[in-house]
Length: 150
Image (cartoon, rainbow, N blue to C red):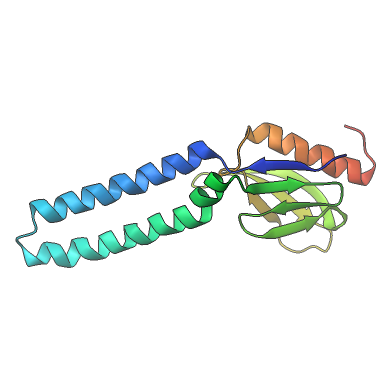
């Protein structure tokens, strides 16, 4: 099987950018409209700094790699590489895999490891493509490594 590559989800990244931009605009509006009271500054300024930090994180971790066309997930005959968290999982170390869903982070592909260590999860939230198709592709590569037919 040839190497399969998935990019970053542009829609999810745009949503994150718009959400943090909206929160920042609201905080700045509150600061301007009630800025004559110094107590407001004590509350709003830390809030703005936190939002700016979130905005910078989202841009650095997801938005800029998406604009550059970087690969978020790469699957080949020997391993799966998740570039968002810099994680490499070799098929030889995987006992089984399953799909899970966490309410705040969306769908995950979970890997049960042969050595009995804690299951490893890869979020498909910021990966371009249909979550079920990505999961099925991972299953196909895993089965191919183990000699199963799908």
